[in-house]
Image (cartoon, rainbow over all chains, first blue to last red; front, side):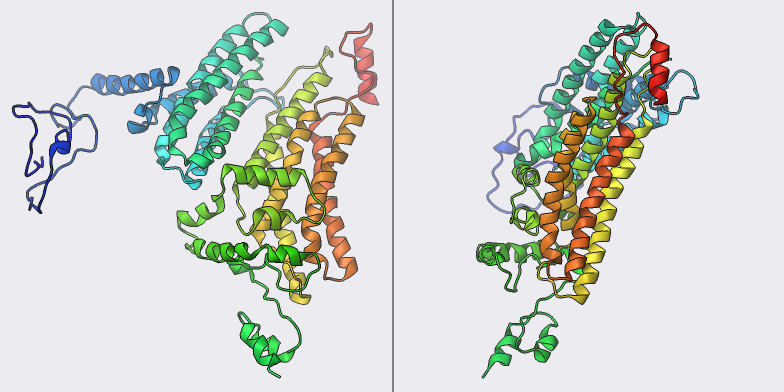
Length: 236
Length: 306
């Protein structure tokens, strides 16, 4: 690890200490030649022993990833302005959510009606191509978010709508009627608003300030279409 | 008399040859297809009548056009090239939408709002919104019309979204392509003062489709008269925006060709709106009442047969 040539950091600190913690105390008044081997770790949290993860048990690997996904779910359900989703993006969560949603939205049997609801492949394509289009749009407008970070946020923010789909399917087990529809409508509207708020909390800061509305509107349209698909789901 | 020398000194491009042939005439440069991002055609250099005052007010747009020419010089395989087509702020998009909703006679949409900064944001997202608006409104309207029927089972009709998308995007891209090709062809025969680049035409068409979004939502109302009035209003607004944009471009041409062009533009627009209304929205029939009557099956059968 590189050490600053003059470091006036606190003596006696134990390793690991946060990266670059003592830099603000340094003032270098002349050019100092620094040589040696520099390694700068890319992740913000340093593993205790930098060994490869090949040797650990499968359960460890899966639990670690599941915990990361679960942590991000919590961030979506209680959206605050944080950049956890952006910093440690992953696409597992969006995949799980998309597959769940598509499975629940497809019709229970291959029926002969021509104009039915969306099929699994259609939902899948809409979610992923919609997310890609919104990401491209945001980048073209000059946002400084990376491609996969944006996909990650958009995918994770489908979580409230997936919950709405679950609730709707449960409500549909009861008898049909206007009350049934009203309950479903209310749930879908609330979850739709939740999705928008969550994704705006994560995405809004990365847009140039005079184009925020232009970048947020496609997100609104995207979640609106998904909400419409959820609301109009009718079981056979 | 040094008139020829003066004229030649003022020429741009390869118009010097024509200036030598016709020393008394003013020559106008006509851009080719490859130069569309850096065109200067929005600035009329001829002596058009009412365009003179706008010409005087266009001094700063002269500089912006030069700057625009410098901006859009990335090669087409880089990301920055496509970013230049999204170089609009929120208020600019709102202004352009407002301009498409309130056509003012004599004001050209392209000259007033686009000013050599055509964007692809507006056309793309207005078309996307329109696709979903038509599909969803059509579905909702059919549901409300057939609400009381015992034999009706609601289906979300998801296939119609892809059909709507094909229609709307084909209209918004192929018709401007055809129109641009046609205008280029006429420009090679007749010197026109005003000519538009392909992106500007796409831009005008995209923004002119905005009026159809609230129209599609209002088409849910299951009254024939209301729907046709809405068609008239929407057609009037967007048709006039298109007509007023393209009239200066064909005005110098043969009278009949100019009129035929404008009529074709409006006719295609009519075809789009009437076609969408007919295909996505079922006709509301007068004997459909949402309450169950004494012989619902017979009423439904009679209505369906008519």
